[in-house]
Length: 421
Image 1: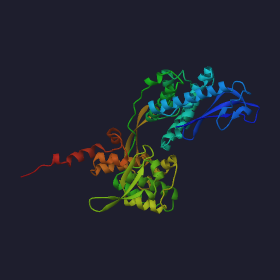
Image 2: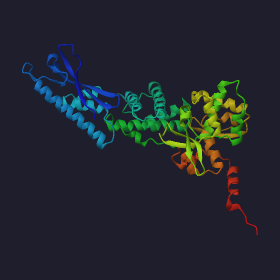
Image 3: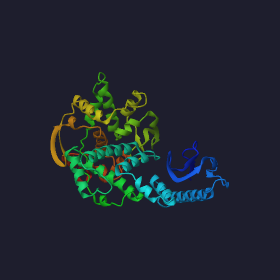
């Protein structure tokens, strides 16, 4: 169990404030002043208490107070962990100390602003075990936009996050940042996550945010057919390492359904052999960064060849650059059939017709793997396990079949077979 420690703030002075230190999470301690001073000569560093000698009046009372503080903080920690199933927050520990020492108003003076709380909460979560880098990046991008909005458009505090704030934040997101509906939905979900935590920790009683509601839209995706994926793999980019590296990462994703962040982490150490009915097959076993799920997928020969060509680990590149470069590679590969995409720009739907290479992003290749496996007759449940999709609804967003392809699937089914006698 985390332990309460007491120490002197200024051990080299004649007298010093007694400070409390308490570990609320791995590698994170909260420190708070007890508001009590003690002669340095009377402090027993080993026992973390004042010496009981009659030479120093009040030491017995001080020790009794420190005992009460220690008991209160430990009781608070046990309640949070065993009853609420969470770690104690630094603010809760400080509040307990201030109340026991008759300084309840001090906590109000030191209370975090809304923006300070969000920043501190992001940092706290980033230090938790098994916290995903993907989630941490999402939170920090959200905080950047939230800070920009609060500083330039709508000063944001605990008390003014209401329906008007919500409407203005949407207006800013669509018309200033040109965000998609799904980006705004993601940001509102993150906001509500932090505000729920703030209410629980006693920072605010404002619950207007619970009525904020938006519906996510299916992602705008296209996919590459097996022939197009093969064409991309076959183009000679030996004279252009910039495009070759991005192309190779895309091929890996197109045959594994890996997210962009997971391709960064793939190494030949993830290659395994899997028992099968007839012998064994090569596979990949790794933990997804977004969900922390362990998945096992077959190892496509192209994937093995590409990873080994780079010495066991693929080159890392930013998602933004990769999105630009992969379009160029697909154009060179002749992936130019016209596609129509319905995009959401500033909250308005717009039809755009373009050559397919122009619509390709790094996320296209996750949809490519899902769609081509589905077209090949692999059961959806198996594909979902393969790619780590949790629900059928989310998975089906990645299946990109044209109307005529659905007709072909039905026509080729046994239901349409006629037995002629």
